[in-house]
Image (cartoon, rainbow, N blue to C red):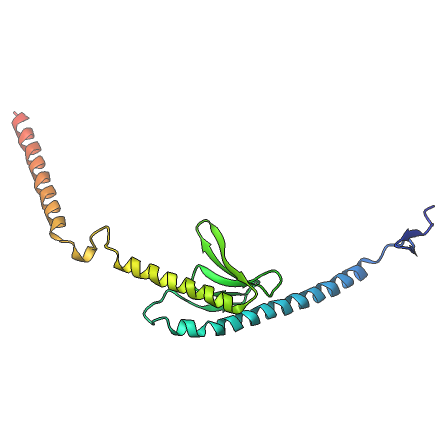
Length: 184
């Protein structure tokens, strides 16, 4: 029975193993084909993100120069991303046509907006930029909970030092006097 053909998928095959070299050659060819597809998909993602980046140019042209919250740019790693600021970016979805605007928080990544339409993402980024600018204004206009170091009076440190020095001299004088009185 060991010489009998093995029936698989309706075609008779013999139980003869393939050579490892041939199998490795075939695996390399398949990997190269997959790599080419992945590179093409990554290039397509980057191209779509560049189109979105150009659509955002009018928005960022309106942001005043003194506001340095936003650092927009495309990173072309394994997953291309269009960064809006340090915590928010746009990445393509699994189907490579879906824009996904996400924000990293201390509790994880949240999706702010998803859309196939670049105009919807531009609107969402515009709203996000406006909210961030308002947060910045509030943070700058809030009264500080502590007194800044520049407005503190430096004399308090000198008074504490002087008091400690005088107390130390008095204690040493007291020990010296006590030692002098005990000595016959």
